[in-house]
Amino acid sequence: MMNPYDTGLGKTPANYQPLTPLVFLERAAAVYPDHTAIIHGKARISYETFYKRACQLASALAARGIGAGDTVSVMLSNAPSMLEAHYGIPMTGAVLHSINTRLDAANIAFMLDHADTKILIADTEFGPVLNEALGLAKVKPLLIDYEDVELGVEGTRLGDLDYEAFIAEGDPDFAWQMPSDEWNAISLNYTSGTTGNPKGVVYHHRGAALMCYANTIATGMGPHPVYLWTLPMFHCNGWCFPWSLSMVAGTHVCLRAVRPKPMYDAIADHRVTHLSGAPFVMSALLNAAEEERRDFDQRVAFNHAAAPPPAAVLAKMDEAGFELTHLYGLTETYGPATLNAWHEAWDTLPGEDRLKKRIRQGVRYHALEGLTVMDPETMENTPADGETIGEVMFRGNIVMKGYLKNEEATNAAFAGGWFHSGDLGVMHPDGYIQLKDRSKDIIISGGENISSIEVEDTLYKHPDVLSAAVVAKPDPKWGETPCAFVELRPGADTKAEDIIAWCRQHLARFKCPRYVTFVELPKTSTGKIQKFKLRELAKDV
Image 1 (cartoon, rainbow, N blue to C red):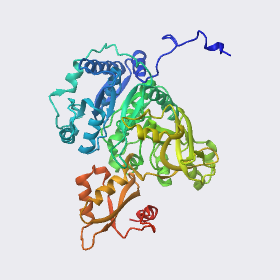
Image 2: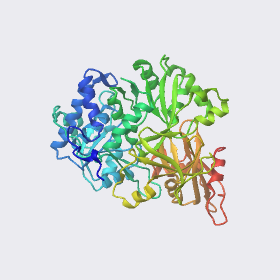
Image 3: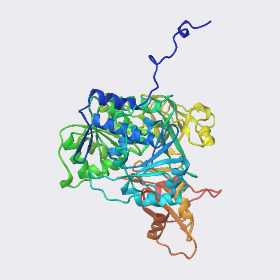
Image 4: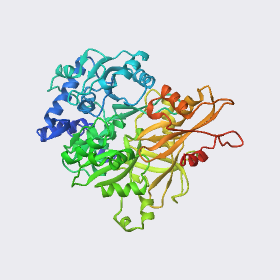
């Protein structure tokens, strides 16, 4: 029998438009044209100006032939140019690829080639590593240099085309088009490589738009919040907050680097209401010297991810004026996909019981349709007993489209109709999940993923190393840091500092182990290194 509601009630332009976060900036500029959208040094940029500059960027890109399906890569700090890129690039139908500013030349070159980059917009601060990467890459993109004149940052230019001059070529009234389909790609973000090259995670307009609604609800954002950029915007597109803030006409307070004094100054001077980051941001705030601190009378919402901080840190952050919300997610889920939704009744629990509630990763985000813990082989839910370990899995509109040019990895990630996170955890009786381990031995340091396998591969290339294993060591500043256990070849007299120097020659600095211990590695009867024993040893290194 035909459903009567399906007859003559089709989609038309009047009742159906593709979801996209781009319209949020257009609306904010129309409704609050004079409201401050961006604070950067002494510069104050209104929503009207922000929108017009995004349109100018889109217009200039389109004039250079950029359109649907093209990739525009950017390697930028948390500056106005990065915010403009989040709108101007997808306004052309192109895809925004944000490069991690901490990567080495080899990784950057791979990404530029894999993404088939047509244009590269780069902060001159990162000119040296980019020049090296461009020498390794096959693609020859148009190069545009962004010089942060406002903060007087000196650097190295890649070419002769200046960002401001390029923007000036564009039309501030550029008639950008809505995406033809909300499933169209809006951005590309690369994961840290585990057993090979990094994988390119593709986001679509629909997921990005829905994340904006979820972000504002989950973090308690009302009208005109003031958001301090302690989270790198290159990381999962800043958890989609470059788009989310426009929804509520908030103010972006740009911060090029996480330093105690600039953070305290911004919080006090601009009355910051929200910020996000890894535990090392908390460490920077709590361990600031007395002369770096500033008093402020507002409560600041702090959305933190990665490993949950110790109870003492949680207590100190509360005393310092910060309201903490624990989030968890992956690059493949646009950033946060769970939150530890707090219940007032838990405030009266004894300290140890309250902490057990606080360190859980929580329940699904508002825009996520499914969150569970399963046996990855049988695809059956594990018992909700808080003890049975399985793989954390996601399902919903804020899960990536897939991995660019990698059908095999995409199919494996989506096997059984769920996204396999690779993280191991438990489901508690009240429906809250808690992570227990990482099946691929990823170390999360300062919010950045570090593959232990990649670091181990570098260690094995050292001529004096017989065997090596890398695990996460708890760190009060970074959350976790790589700790290497090494067996040397007979007769070798290599020192720990030699091993660290070797790693720094072959890896991005943030991936290098800060601790090296020479031991006979514990192994099973079949020769497999017992990393669980090393994790215990690492706590005391």
